[in-house]
Every structure is written in C-alpha cells, then in structure tokens.
Length: 433
Ligand SMILES: *Cc1c(COP(=O)(O)O)cnc(C)c1O
Image 1 (cartoon, rainbow, N blue to C red):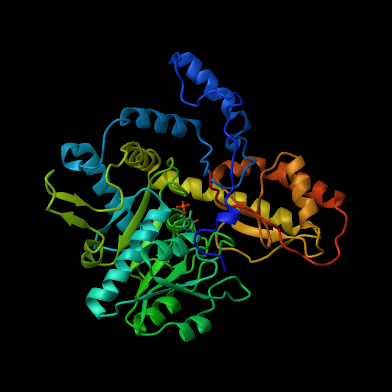
Image 2: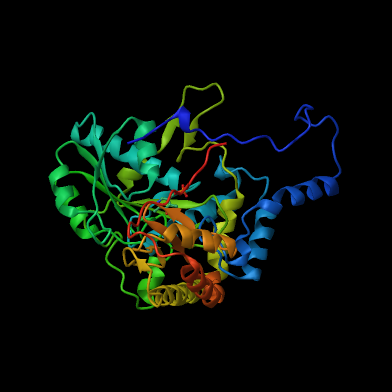
C-alpha cells in the first residue's frame, strides 16, 4: 500500500508559457488584457455548467443563486476572519453556521467550528481524537480505524499527525464490515470512522453498530458526512429512506460535513461538529509567548478568507429549509432517472445500490473501458474508479438525464462485448503540480 510521498509517481506539468523568457512579467498589463488572457487560458477547463461533469462541482442549477454568491464574494473579498472580533458580521455568520449545523445534525451542544474544507475537518477530528486518547485515557499512541472506502484524507491526516492507521474491509454491499471492525478495535483505538456516505459507492455505513463498537472500547467515533451531511437531513424530510447516521445515534462523537458540496456554496466551507464542548476545546490553540500578542485560533489556518463564510451564510439564507427541500427533490429525481436508465441497459450494473445519488456502475462483461471511451467521445466527463464509472448527481443533472441515458445506450451498443473480466479502470481523483 502506498501512503505518503512517492517521488516516482509525481506528475509534472510543463509551464504554460512557451517562450524561454522569465516567467515573472516585466511589465504590468491592463485589466482587460489580464482578463482576456485568463479567458483564453481557461478554454480547456472542465465545463461544469453543461451538466456533463459529475464531480468537483455541485451545481444547484440556479442562476440567481450563482449571481448572489458572486456578489457576496466580492463584498467580503478583503476581510480576514483571523480575528472575527473586529468583524462582528463575520463572527455572527460563523456562529450562525455552527448553530445551524448543530441543529441539522441533531445535537444541542452547539460545539464545533467551520473549516476550509473536508480535509481540514477530518484532520481536526483525528487530532482531537489523538489528544483525547492521550489526555483522557492515557493511550499514548492511539490508532485510527477506518474502512478501505473512507476518504484518503484520513490516511493523509494519520500520516501528517503520526497516528497509526488500520483498515477494515467492506462487505458485499460496500458498507464497512462490522465483524471485521469488532475484531480490529481494541484498547488502543482512539478513533473509529464511519462514512455517511462513502465517496466511491454512496452507501452509508452501519453507524449504530460502528458507534457501539467504538464506545465499548472507550474510543471516539467520527462520522464522515462531508458528502452527505448537507443532503441527508433533507432526504429524510422528503421521505427517502435514510439509515441513522447523525448525533441521534449514541456513541457518535464528531461529524464532518461540507457546506460547499450539497449546501451549494462555493469552495472553502466545511463544518466539524462535536458531541461535547470538551472535545471541541481540544482543537483550539492558544499561544501567549509571542511578542505579537496572545494568539488564539480555533482551526488549522491563521488568516482565513471571509468570502466562503459569507457565501455559505448567503446560500443558506437564500435557499432556506424550503429551498433545500426543493433541491433535495431534484437530486432524488435525477437519481431515479439515472438509476432507472442504467438498469434499463442490459449490459450495465450498479455495483452497490446507494443511499444517495452517488454511485458506481460497470459492465460485468468487461467492456466498461470501451464504454468510458465512448462517453468521453460524446462529451461526458465520467470519473473512472477501480470498479467502474462514478456518478455524483446535482440538481442540474435532472435536465440532462434523458440525453445521458441515450448516449450511454449508444456507447454500450458500440462497445464490443468484453472477455468477461470486469478489469480495473484507472482513475485519478487528485493531482500534484
Ligand atoms: C469531499 C469529501 C471529503 C473531503 O475531501 P476534500 O477534498 O477536502 O473536499 C471527505 N469525505 C468524503 C466522503 C468526501 O466526499
């Protein structure tokens, strides 16, 4: 298993400039020239507005919403949330965001914070668990236990924070294998992770059983709802079957959930919530020996950009409960259209029926590679996973569902039947420049 740095695999990109001159510009350019240059540079970028991409951007499909967020980002462009005490507006919005997340995830404790994204929320949860094990239980070298489907941010956090990481397999349904978990967790376990849902298959782990196993050994239990946290509460209210996953489950001690996914704000806003105030205190950092004055910070960053805070607050106030319920219905309907369409194509199979419209499908006859290429040629950007192609649906996908299924049927018809070996696709989720 590769964890950490592997210099042999580093990707390298040529610089954009093809002359040999120094890269740093000698002369300034007019705003119009800079904008024109940027416009020409981005022609090759992923076109998410078309609805033909299925990751990286969660598109509410709503021009007023997008325009509002642009205005808010400009309004708060230069403010710095490093010291919210001099920006009462940011302080209010930050406290509101934490309180709204607490309400949404079923805890009265109001203990948590906002962060820059899912990876930072996960780092904080792992750090809190490590220090909780050391300070409260006398376990000096606590262990992190996750399923193999848990987001790589956990492996990264374990690597950076020098915490041992043990993996457990998943069952046939793609959910963490709780028997394997029970055999792995012991007195040294500091944190057990459940996903709600996991990214590759969109299935929610058995949170009540996982939290009970953790609690039995005195371990904390984190639910990674980075993907589902801002969708599942609305799914539950529109009557979709949602397995228990939040603070209403006994033994769940922290939850990460990204507002910049199904909360429909732009990048840079996640929430990390705890069951108790004692836990959130472990992530706060105080330093009083600096000539610059007392330094206090609640998360990893020092200087924090204000636009994500104002953007998230604005998105939530623009949509309200009613707006989120309407968006949830669109996501549900998009999911049904895609799932039914794929089920109607003989040679395709969804690998693990999912809890939200995020899932993987493949062609058991071994032709998925050719089908993937056929979809690329038709202008769709499907992510390739080890086990097949990945779909993650936003409200904007409802409008393209019929076209997608028609193109998929064509791509399947055109792909020669494979040799019966499903094989592995090779996908890339992140990148290094
Ligand atoms: C998006 C996501 C994360 C966080 O990843 P980032 O790259 O930091 O946004 C964590 N877990 C799951 C399940 C996710 O989908």
